[in-house]
Structures are given as C-alpha cells and as structure tokens.
Length: 367
Image: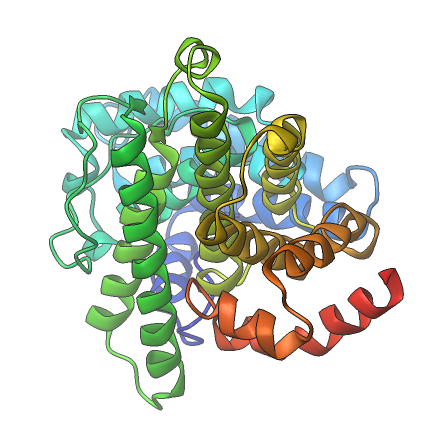
C-alpha cells in the first residue's frame, strides 16, 4: 500500500489523505479501490464486486479529470493516479501498473518535481513510498527521481550519482555504503521507539522519520556492487564477499519495511525480498567451499538469515533456519545469547527482540 503505518498512530498522513479524499471524488474512488483490492488479497478471495465497481468508477472519473486543464495536475488527481499505479504493491503483479506509472511521472514532470507537490510534503512522501515498494517487487530501479529531503537524518556520504537510477559502484564503496546504511537503520529504529512512546507527536517528527526511511531505501535500491561481467572475472574470494554484502543489502531492505514501516510478514514485498535473498545465498553456496570463511562476513550472514527467518511465514522459514545453525557452528556459537550479541551489532529493534522466542523454538525444532 501507499500509506506509511506506525510509529504515528494518529498519522499526519492518514489525516491528510482522509481530508483530501473526502473533498475529492476522484481520489476517494481510487482510495476505495485500493482498500477493496487489499481486502481481497488479505482474505484470499477473487476480486469482489466492490473492487470492480470502485476501479471502473475511479478510471471513469479520472479520465474526465485528465481532460480538464485546470484540474489535470492538481494534488488530488496525482494522488489518485498514484493509488491506481500501486495496485501491484498489493497483488505482487506490477505489470498492469505501467500505464498509471507513466501517467504519474508525466503529471509530476508537469508540476516540476515531487518537491513541488502539496499537502505539506506528505504527497511526495506517499508517492515515493509506493514507488520504492514497486521497485522491490518488480526488481527494478526506482521510477521516480528521489526528492530532496532537507530534514532527513544524515546517513554518511552517498557514493551514488543522483542522475542515475542504477549505480554500479566499486566493491569497496559498495561495502562501505551498505555498512553505513545498516548503521543508520539501526539509529532510526531507536528514534522510532522514542517517537512511538511519546503521547503527542509533532508533524515535523513524523515527516523527518519517513523522509529518512525513504532516503535510505532509495540508496539501497539504486545501488549495485558491479555488473555480471565484473563478477565473472573477479576472484572467488571477491565474488563471495560481493554476495555477502548483496545479502546484507536485501536484509537492510527487509528491516526498513518490517521494523520502520511495520508491513506484515507474508506480504508481497517480503516474498519478493526473500526470493531475491534465497538466490544470493544459492550463489554463495556454489563457491563457499572454495574460500576461507571470514569471521566478519559470517557474522553478517548470520544476521541476514536471522532477519529473514523473523520476517518469513512458516513455510518459508525452512530456507533460513538450517543456515542459522550452520553459521553458528562456524562461528563457534553455542547458544542464543551468542547469536543476540552478534545481531545487535547490525540492526536489532525491539520488534525483532519480541519475536525471538518464536524463532528460538523454530530453531530447536529444526535441530
């Protein structure tokens, strides 16, 4: 979905959408369609009559709106197109979103940039979230140009070129970038806990938090260690290290969506990320017998698999649980406290800690 969820239970985003949707029939129908198809997916049912009704009505109203010069590029029109273009974020099939995504980019260009959109910056954030979720699911570069978030928490010096959607960077830069971003996600998780415990949250705090999440996720999704030809001609040890940090890149994306956005395990974004992670781990398996295991990289892989296991639904955990035991054995860890000391060096939020007992029980069953 487009909307940010917690830490702000009385969200400035929810209030903004509600006020604007209730005052604009096009946006309201798009929101109702988005909500209806979400319910269809949650209940694993065919598309309901309500879903088709709201889809048909929103497209009909939107077509009329786009032919009106005065209203074609207003905020509510752009928001409605954004909702219709985010259908794949719920269903997992982004192929049918292409037309709406193209229209969304054109409308934003007509306004100049995302920064020029209204609703006190919330519209730019919401559209960017939808774009980044779609990027994960479709395994493609972000479609929208990253907004300039002046209030976002600094997260080191980015090695990415902003004019490029995909950045192929040298391994050393890739490794340092990933480690910086992981550290910043851990910092944000702490800030989130502070915000969530406050009885009153300011709009500035909420905006800063979500802007920071977006900046981190954009960097994670806009970066690749190298192209395939480079990997083929690299040493086995360098290939192994590259795969390790690619795995940590995916785990970092899981942490953003699980800890900071509170998306639910089993949703399409986690399915997509876990599928990508499984492919990287398979690449590691193919060459692991040819390299000397580095302790620091083994600790990263242990954290990666713990993160993946925590956010997997039951049937998918089997991919990661045996690996956790394997990395524990290599590292000489004999108990869960050993594992906790390791994973706390990366991203380990309270929400993850609360799920530990379930993960430990699963590990015991596998053993």
